[in-house]
Length: 316
Ligand code: TXA
Ligand code: MG
Image 1 (cartoon, rainbow, N blue to C red):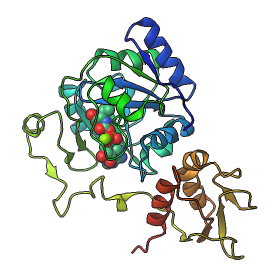
Image 2: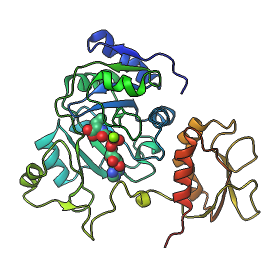
Image 3: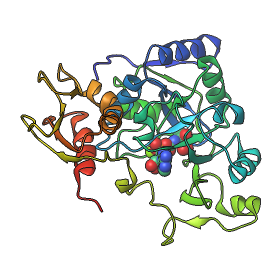
């Protein structure tokens, strides 16, 4: 994170054009939605998405919500089903995020899904958010625009209080109307509430004509917070390895002669951008035993180590 100056953009033609330009160049732009201010990056650009985690100082890679302009844009990235279409038609644009199977080969960074085969999408209901999405012309990954562990911002001033100097720009569209994050519903299988939020649960259940399954139900999918659900490669992983045994595939970091290398120059942002793609590649290579170089704990290194530790944890 070597950004120096965070530009404050007006939500006029010039500001929106600038915002789209920054996103296209792989930069970070905060913009208002009806719920909270989001911290946006090009969802298809690994390095740009890695910058989101760096700017927020997130200690782990939570999957991010992808913002799109309308239902038809959403269906380029996720496989809509009957329940999802019913909810989308009733509540989009609006404070509802749907988790659905990702379209295979969709142009979305694996860092957005944290390596999962599902994707969270939402169509925001805010003039400025819509205008940013239209001007950019693609999917925008955006968590709330606050440093990790701090409260979500509902004004541009809040965004600057937390992230000034760490992001390229904020589009100042005034205070957010809803003020709490979107409600998240997984439509993978039985519709399940993953997070209460801006759209009341009763309204969703009335629309579906059935109660939403709750995350705490024994049969429900694992909640997003419990990152055990995150993708882990099939092979067994040995962390902090300074070399690979002959039977091991080496996932390196830094100037080592490994089979795959997160960043030969030891750049943590580059390593974060490569992480999930390389974990998948290890499966493609049929790696049964994987040695992983040590990754330093500063900056994005914390999140990378958190993810590696989970991927290496004993499993059934
Ligand atoms: O209102 C909102 O939703 C705001 C605005 C900016 O749109 N965004 C927001 O994003 O709150 P964030 O990153 O703070 O929260 C995203 C939540 C996380 O709890 C994450 O675990 C969950 O969405 N999530 C994202 N992708 C998921 C997936 N594939 N499966 C399950 N949960 C997912
Ligand atoms: Mg948040």
